[in-house]
Image 1 (tube, rainbow, N blue to C red):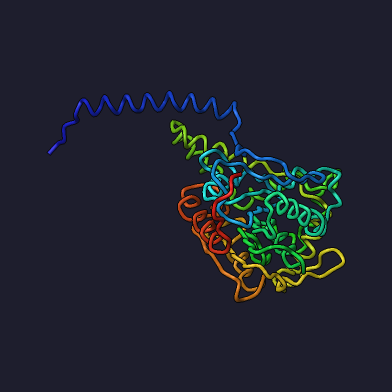
Image 2: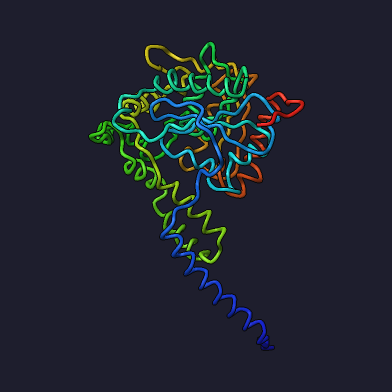
Length: 365
């Protein structure tokens, strides 16, 4: 039996398609001519040294828990991935849960940072930034949450004898570099010399880092553009896509001296897997971390695969204080998307709360 089309349904569908075409045209112009409103949560700079800054975020929600949460970002990318846009921000979420949140942002490296080593970040910047956070929050300890390479820095710092770290959270932090991607494999096997990546400033330029990340999933960008075209009528989708796309292209230079150390110590020697890492003139034993440790990583992370992140559960900290959180999603499951706000961030917040002191009464910011 032949179905009969309802003229009203046909008209409604035509009107919908016309409206969406107009919205696609409008949003297409906006996407091409404007920048996303990223990193918008109000904040104050409470410490600064060279290009590095420590930000304390503001919120109308009172502080319910101590110690404060100090996020240590990676050297490779912009920290606004964790404060992507209003209504879709990990920082905003944690503030709303009553946490006192700081971000240690390394800034944009230039020729003045070319000689920065692992010790520069672990022994010089991190202790001072943590001291500033403790002073601002009137706290004896902190919760350190390191994202990607920031987790490595946080772990090395936390292993110090006097590190005032109650909790250490590793978010997609690589430990086993033999399980990393094609670019790391080329460096590890000597097919790519780190000095070949360094430019006249003494740093690895941002474009080289972007190319390395693009190699991890070269066809993904084509699929993303197709998805954008399909959803160009949807304001919320376009705003989220624009912010994420901006961040994925917005890498920063990597200091040359630090790169050489990362390659020799972490990549070729795979030192994190041994639990002992050379930092400056000393050797750090990761088993000396006294903090509660949460190793959080994602099943579908193509930047730091779970095989590279999972060993942190066995090498960092004391066995009785280690916990593991295996998450759905990819590398940005800590920052954006439905999984982040429905699963990842609530789980991280709950763990922090369980290992923190509740303030009674809460403290106004």
